[in-house]
Image (cartoon, rainbow, N blue to C red; front, side, top):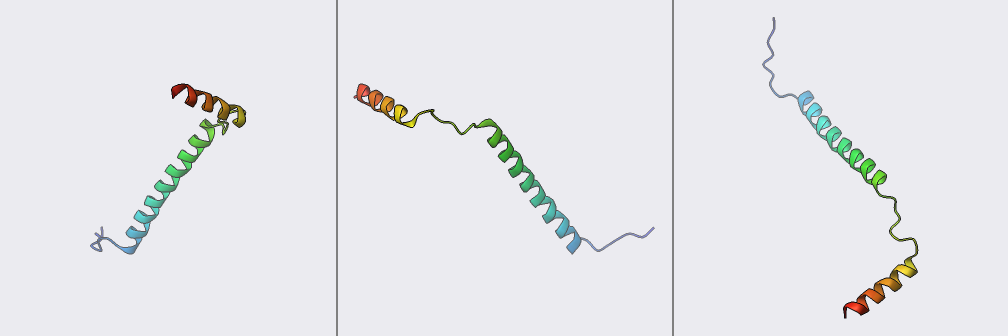
Length: 62
């Protein structure tokens, strides 16, 4: 049986760097999927009506 005494080689560096970036990309894809599936994109149905309601609420608070 032959033992290797090379230590940390270029192949180890390549594998560790690739594993790091694979984890980063996987997390980014996961977060993007969760973000796109949980938000409909609809904030208000009618922005003009919403702005008028905001103005009324702001005036009432004064």
